[in-house]
Image 1 (cartoon, rainbow, N blue to C red):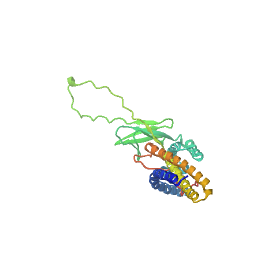
Image 2: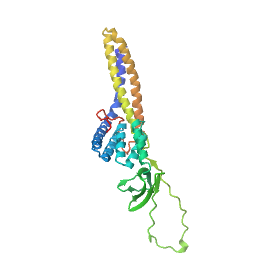
Image 3: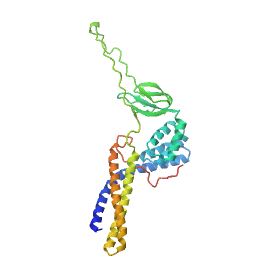
Image 4: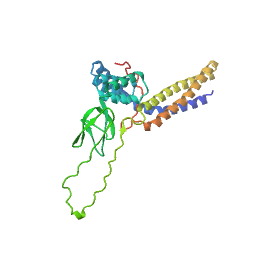
Length: 306
């Protein structure tokens, strides 16, 4: 084991570490927002303001996905009797790794609200449909309460019946032609009407397509952990090498052990960093702008469930 060999390994480690700092820096702001939202939810839950607590916990999980925040959001939404939010959170949980307590809350939400909500989508071309004050994305199914819902498109309103048995895809009818807009033509100039083409139904997309941010966040976190371990064992190997060259034969075995672990973490760090880079373009962050997301919340987040 020579000084040149160890230094070459450390230079490789530093290059791999550079891949980690950029996503970690981008995630810091989101992590702070998540902690602040979680603190608001914790306080509201303690004061039995369950609707406010559910909204705050859901915001914390959206900023930085974590099973504790999502479990707390589901528990508060159920206590607040918010059927729509509960089912939206249950859909979000279905895209996460299995967690026993989270799965328990998901099953509780489905048993409580599955007959009180249904999926609704509004299908139209170049329109901005609304459900009350809620803006809807054309062609995207969302959870709403069952029964008659009023959908507004421009100046027109439609009564749509939503059931819990199957999704309701409402197609907005075209505007009627304005009366008297054309001068009448003599019978000799009238042409047979063109064949009526059936309207094309826009593709319905369910929410949550693409790679979930939790996967990307997990890869970033794994890269950071591997990078820290690589640095620790690289420094130990370099220190043992110096001691061995100074005449301390007892430093040989620990130095070789640290060098072996440093080599292992070089490979694992490079693999996890490459995985994060490959997953980034396919990650669905829930909007048009790309933002970094981390999987676990920071250590400062309170982990005790309310």
